[in-house]
Image (cartoon, rainbow, N blue to C red):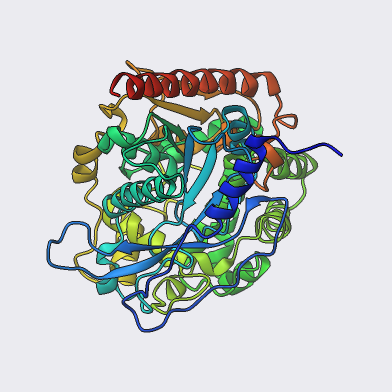
Length: 489
């Protein structure tokens, strides 16, 4: 029988203490809808819910209302007591746990604890039971950043209390992908004293009003043959829709989309997902084959949409239905309305059709997006992208110790920082199926590749090379943080 070491005993006691780490306060709403939690799965490092009492309005000295915000912690690799704490930022959807992506590899390498805070309003972290436009006034990236700052302080102070110490900071590092990647970069920009650095993966830091580069990148990622097939398919759908609209929409499993603009947005997104998430052959192979064989392209695309986009990928048609987006009840599908509110007030990212050589329908234009914002949220709602870019800097962000990473095939990379600058390196991972968040997610980017496995990327070496560079930056900035802390003692 082998005796446990003293360190092991301390570690066990520490974990037992942390199991009582969180407490709950009553939210200011009288009741709240609780969504069903996921069962334990290898897809998550943890899905055990913890709760934190958060301020509703960080910018008002008079409003003291609070709400319950969900978070998670994963301590299996935490090096007691001075290991780093990785804050993995959740974005524009329900946060049901800490995903078992490349974060788990990094946590093990650095001996880090991993904590993750659900974005306000999403999932179970809604301050209100009703999502009417008036109640969404506190839904913004600015409020979300303060949520992260307040939570970071709360967690550090609670950790210090458990370790019977005071005025000690573990080195923190923030991570995010996509919108949460932008939040990661912005958090380091606005709160540099609270984190040693940031990984901003596929970080959409540039608010864009008319995002024509998005559609252009889809065409480039598709390649000449697939792009031509997509363009011809779109033209054929438009022609048939003019005379047999209900039949065509039913063919695609989207009969509920009465608004033609919603339907064309749905069709455009269906093709985007193949490139954005590392599955280009799922779309292009059958479409190009159908074109070469003289088969019906509309039928071929409809098959892809129903089997992959709606079936395997699991997208719901109602996501594109403005009637659904107008629903103010708090439900499991409220994230659609919430994200569109952020789009319509802060960042736009309007994926409009370019004037020439477009893949998506010309009906998906600026007017379509502005009409949607007005129809769903009411008069006076529009995205002030100029104000957003002035506040954060867009791709001219004046931060430090932020590492940006993008996939070569990802249309969102044109809203990210793709050129390195002082203390802010930027890497593009180039491969046939390198899309959104490849550095953290591997290939494909969805569904989840456990531990961000890159072996299914067309060029695993390209992913490994960028990951090595990311790791070196994290190591350097954590070391600098620790040295600064020692020198200040």
